[in-house]
Image (cartoon, rainbow, N blue to C red):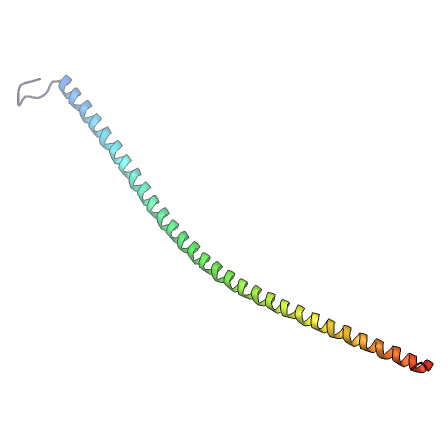
Length: 119
């Protein structure tokens, strides 16, 4: 190297220039990497907010579905109970109709017997 305070030689100046170029290239790559990382972090934050909003919406939908299912179950139970009562009523009406039919049949036979002069 040249003496202190003296101008560098062409070889020394070239060597310094190349070292400065390498430092600048490393710095540029670092800046680009930092910019990419910052953009990725912003995208990740945006995605996290969207995921949180979707989760909240899903939770609200689940609560509505649960309420709807409970109402449906209550309605189905009421229909089932009403149907069971209707079956019981129908069975009672059928039994009473069978009794009335048997009594009418008995009265008819008695009337026929009386008409024949039997009793």
